[in-house]
Length: 283
Image (cartoon, rainbow, N blue to C red; front, side, top):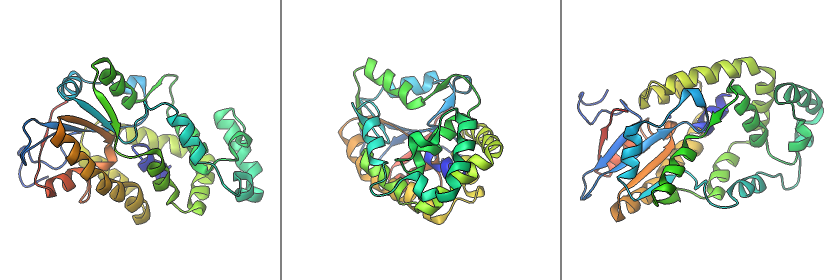
């Protein structure tokens, strides 16, 4: 679960002014020659419907721009199939990698999801862990904030783009050693009640709408340096040139996992290094 936290969400300053480093999840980007502001919003990739609603402020800021940027353009036809294809083992399988542990893991997986792990044995652990993560949200109705934002953007005829391709995203996931992924899968099925409690706490922290609290929570969950480098920092650095190019062409709204915003090499800090002003906005 600790490995999956960053995957799903893969989240005082010099003074108490608008330059606060972590007092919101919605930020206005201005300065450095920008004629109009753009916006950066930290999301949570999947939530119970009762735990989330797009605020009017977020809606209006999105509609004041001309383009929505997500981590990956989820509205692109075939994106889910492309993700699944790229997550397949090339020369092995999940049952082979788990060896004698497969049957026990499969039984626990079925007890949690109602589905046999045999259906996912051609895929790397990320796929089955994603299924388990959905089950940590103890509710019948789940929503994806990015889908809501995409719907608003489509209805307003705004452009929708991705800061990275599916291949880029999969490469970041696969940068985590396979043995670490397998161990995380086994721990998650064995300690699923703990995973549910951790998800509940993560949602609570997210609802504080405070970027630094999310980053601090991730660090306190023993986020490895390897994970932070590949899943957060490297991707953050890759996104900055694309963000800068985009909002110098036209105002844009960026919605990325909240875990990417905070920290010394988070998107907020990296944009400030480029000379942009980041102002927290009340939700």
